[in-house]
Image (cartoon, rainbow, N blue to C red; front, side, top):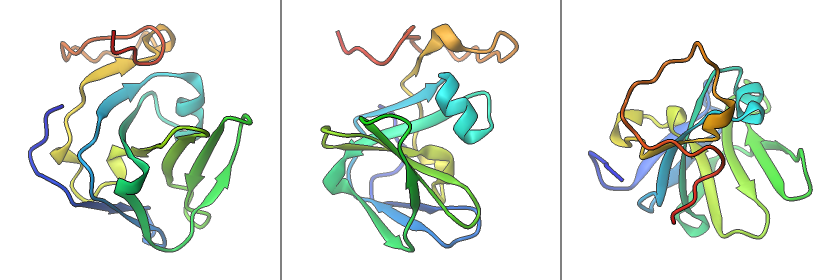
Length: 138
């Protein structure tokens, strides 16, 4: 994973009510093309970074959350709606939206996931590996 700065990184929602700090180097940074991420963000693709849970903390405010399945939880600002995190229950990681970082340019994506669902008019000719489903390190 390419980074241009070492942690900590900080970020937050659009209105500033929720702020977070990342103290771990991300394990993975990826563009997600799945339908659920697109609908949650209102965007054709969402870029996520995955860190160990102990490397992510909310430092101001309390995000609202919802679960669209028993295994997942999305956190967002209840005031402005900015999507902040995605968590799989039972995993010791947190995915956070790279675009909510104060300096999103410090994290460069490694790949595309759920490419099978990408929108045909969304062209990202970046040369990154594309996975039809979720990331599989093998």
